[in-house]
Length: 392
Image (cartoon, rainbow, N blue to C red; front, top):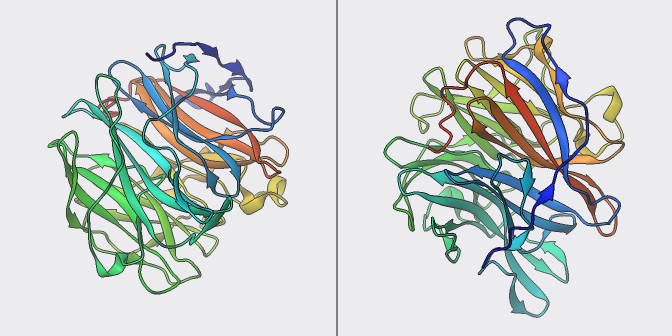
């Protein structure tokens, strides 16, 4: 029997009205506090939402130290995100005790509704700890998937079976935006590692029957041999093309373009239309997609955040011109505001209706233990987002 304790969202920042821009599709942006954690010294992290026909389903994890995650939980909203049920642990995802102080857990979970089978497919990765410290941080991570069925029950996590020389030490899909094709196949952006220091990225086409995820084909591989290389790609489709945005280790963000989501062109660097690069430090970016325009969300170096770890606050958003393949500087705005030295981490984008998109993230302070607020930002559109494919 599931609990239906309703928790109200309190307002964190005033609505940002953008009526002055006639061409702007965005009517307003507002950020609200979902769960307070800075004062109570807890941090519910990795909040990621899936739109289903019945509710909004969020997966979330307790974060206690750097990359130290605990059992994934879930919460639901039955009123488009206004109120949420009490967090509940997801069955069969408890930490696995291996002995000798070692433990494993599934982390970086991304849920998404799969309309062809009527279930929520959740993708994550397994991570490893010894005495509450992350070990083997860049290796031995594999894609783990599990399902939330239509009746509310959960399946046990399974490893996605796929062998490739470029993924001999790791293949991860944690935190990535993916794309479901009309036939039900899923394009999953992946991070891979072989026997060298730098990671590579690509997309993996998989079939899914409602219970089993099976690899079919790997796209061409993108590399950048700088420090740890390329990581945490996210995919979207706009103007008839697929777009992949990629975290990197060279103080830049990168992207690639494909006609089919598998055949990727050469790696390109995110720049603004005035020629300046997007200066960001080894941090993920994500897409916000409206049927009339594509946007990129990101963090970057700014005068206000020079002392913040990897400049991870505030979170910005700008139009991405798909014809010129540049960010439009005049459209940049703060999507999620800065709160002192608290940093933003591992956010996610979900279209919940034709007129509203949610961005969920943790706003955290590095402390012992980590503490942070869980935030929801609402983007209200002036015109219907016809291509949002809310339950694809």
